[in-house]
Length: 472
Image (cartoon, rainbow, N blue to C red; front, side, top):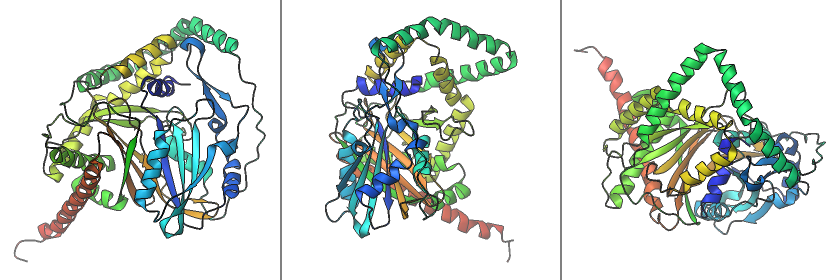
């Protein structure tokens, strides 16, 4: 297991209220398949996803990183559950089900995933809720699983040939001995890595400069933020809300007002958090909402690698700016500066170096960091590009995909954004006890997107008039 993947397991262990699973809900046109039909469809794809039949095993005394081993008693029926929504089967009922599913921790004695076949959605629809531990996948690889399980056409693909036989589970003695061997070889691996780098002095110098700049930027971004009700202790229960938008609208805002799709999304969220702070009677200061923004560092061709390949940016959302267009400009300026500072590259370099560190020290450091009071990050906002083409399963079309991001430590609110075809969905996760007004944040997202769309239309309408010569 990579250091980053192991870190997500450690974070869940360190926080008794955290369930560090990510999820998405694929909503289908009807009619719903039977349980056995769904079971057969997933079974026909299992050879494509190795992790689905492996479990995470910790090494005794944390002498080494956890390892993936075959589950010798794998039972697909345990991982595929079935339920139904109460009438009328709308968003409110679906969100309550997701809240309940995501509050439960996955069983560490089994592969760390579940899939729920959900019937009873209004309009004759049904859904699949896919829940995966964050140590298995990040947002990009989690979305890529749909490419493996679902079809690109209404005609179902034939099952994949399956020759899987579980390998014997390693004994405690073997795991301990292997971890001790890794600890012994650690200095040798470090020396080899350094020797390889010295053979490419130009690359080493460039990498050192980039990493140094990024670390300086990260250190500056870790200053404590303004104290507010947005961060603090969290419980185990969650609240979950959905906001739907049009990807075409977001791209129109990008074309007319500048920036990237991610810039527009973060500007919308800045307006929503501003609305929430004002509704709570708290000042929306310039350093009130710092968001952890995951950044994919996958190389071309690594989309199907089922592990975390992410770094991060720490962005202060401009909640102090009242005008939506000015907020977008502020987000653009800050994200441009963060990219130039190479924060993401520094985070990636630190993660890469961690592969050569003794895991007992790495594990201790992770636990100390996660157990310390968190006053430098208020929320997490992750934007995942999903499939751009329609997907199908068992001959039924996927109508929409709804994302879910976990929260932990002192992060009381998080937002996941996922695009599918021409739809953009915001999935808002909140701590149940401290975020009873989560709907204020959801409405703020709706209003913020509408404001930017209106501003983009105004800008587009003004362009032809400005181009007409005087006197005509």
